[in-house]
Length: 209
Image (cartoon, rainbow, N blue to C red):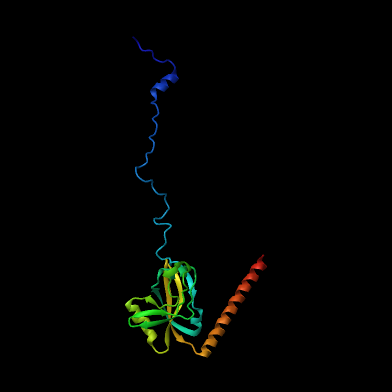
């Protein structure tokens, strides 16, 4: 039997042209999806050059008035649990505190950390001696200098750093009465200048408005 061929020209064109083939769909690789471009690895984490956050509990402002601070060193301190909890509440005083070298150990004396109210029978003595944590080379290089004539180990501030309690100790030379007066005058003059500059900045801002 003879095949019937199409007589229409458009039908011939349809037979002659191949049927379009659909493009294959892109497949996703197995595993985790790729991270968007532009995001750096480790974004959101603390940078190595960033300083750890500090929360100051107490500062010994009197020490810088009574002593000329020659050098400072950050120290650890041995505390019990009730003392740390009391410090988190911001309760302590360094006004009468000082450091003492005893053999190859350094102690903080006179530091007043009040009892923690919820500690009950496991509380601490508020003004007990507390050992400062230093390396041997630090004791030899820093603390031994306090044995020199006229030099004293004084605590400048106590603070939390990365969740640990730290003490900034200073080597101080006692000021004479006239030195204290000069220091007081210099501090007062500096505060007056700062207040004047702040007032000038406020007036400049209002004038622009």
